[in-house]
Length: 327
Image (cartoon, rainbow, N blue to C red; front, side, top):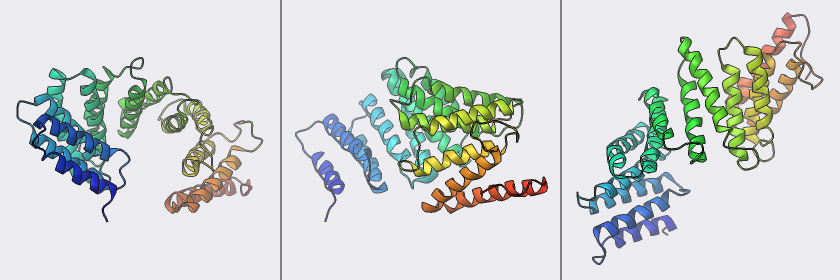
């Protein structure tokens, strides 16, 4: 029995065979159906079907339909980019789509169209860079070009996405010199820029994600102000925990409390956090809570890392003559 998606795909192919419609109408119909397949796809096959429909739409059009071809090829790039098992090949094909249409969109399209393609090209390039198949600096340049259009005032959502992407890109570059420290500072600044346009009430999940990421950026920054950064990181994690909880978002909650525990274990032993426990005791307590949640969801690698952290804390205490941390 055919699924609804398979029926929709077959109907799209039949529709383009109607001689009463023009090539442009057939192409636009195929593009719209393909875009529909991309909304909450139930399998990678639906995204591959969308790519097939975009290719069929392009084949329908005469060479003179330059702008429409560019728009369809840009949409095809988004389908390729989101195929979960597509690997580097799909990402490379997506980048080729984006790069081929950018000159046309800059010349004939709307500024927002070109900026959206720059954003997607930046994301696809970041994906390739994480696999050693592209330069992260090229992704950063794409995001900055998109920010010329997607300003904080006019396009707050896109502005936030771009700054989040930029921060992640900055942090992915190894810190090997003074410029590395500057990139870390720029990552923190980008996360803070995002927090100017999203808030706890209207965008709770995004707010929690950015606060968590900000905490990580502050915690691992190679700065001479380590204590100040760590205390700021604790504040960021506590903000994230206003949204993340063990009932509604258990894995995200576990990630954040584990990150918070990492900060606590690295604070000076006499640091006051207003909880009534030593920072080491607080860290162990949070680690144990996170381990229980990771085990519950089968994330054994993460729980093993945290168990090793607890063992290290207890070993440090034994060597210092303080005995084991209270469980």
